[in-house]
Length: 338
Image 1 (cartoon, rainbow, N blue to C red):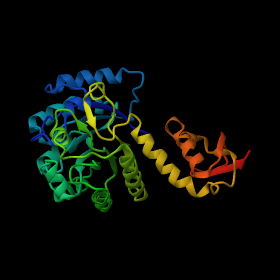
Image 2 (image 1 turned 60 degrees about the vertical axis):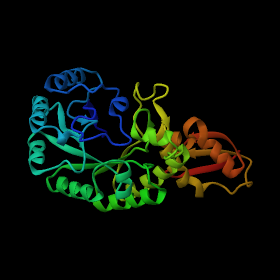
Image 3 (image 1 turned 120 degrees about the vertical axis):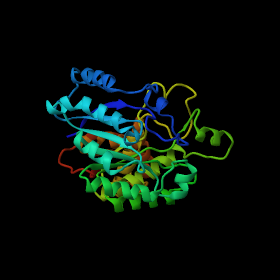
Image 4 (image 1 turned 180 degrees about the vertical axis):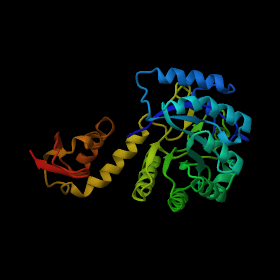
């Protein structure tokens, strides 16, 4: 069952410096006000009284900053604010995001006592050259150490990855994926790098020293990466940044593979690769009907029917109908002449 996440954004709080690609205030549409117990309580009260709140299946998530680089007194204050709601059973736990180089035994113990169950690490890349060019301030070894520390302490571990950073290539990113698979985290997110106005990456782009991935490149790279991760039983829980009012204002995203339905584009591409061997050879049929599991028909159609256009280009046939067939297993289609 999908978790009901109640996010509390702490944009850039605890971050030791600004990474080349980052502007959390625009990404989250949250101004950089200091988050305290009172503001967290207000967010929680609003959430638990919402009709969409799923009591017992909900998690409180601190996103957008480096949680374990906050002062320990602030960490305790924020976690203590959530504690009564945990005790009432309204939340199953807390998740936080942080940097791989911001963990020590004291902070692990604070999180454990405070009800944190999941820690997501901003790994971004497992290539030290890419990390250095992106001003991350940590190394791939820091990420390896952090995953081991968290797993040994009993936390659920997520990794956040970012293809398309300066110095990154398809090859280096797929090597990152292979190294991440070796670490066996519990989940992953993949966010292709975007050029956001006012960031260091924007200055590199405007000077001609950085070229972001195209949308097609990012979709193909993420499809390959997602396939490898999930084959290794590491679920990919999100691909592409979530839209926010500030992020999508004109002039905020200067370049890069932004798309409002990026994750769906990737999943549709993965599905096409799966069904391609089941399509008839080009020119063998002229008009066809395709049957598929009802659950997979959106993937078959693709974003704005791009999937059907692709099938037509592959087969040379006109797709006259797409119909559900619950006798077909996932990943299987039936193509019939009309």
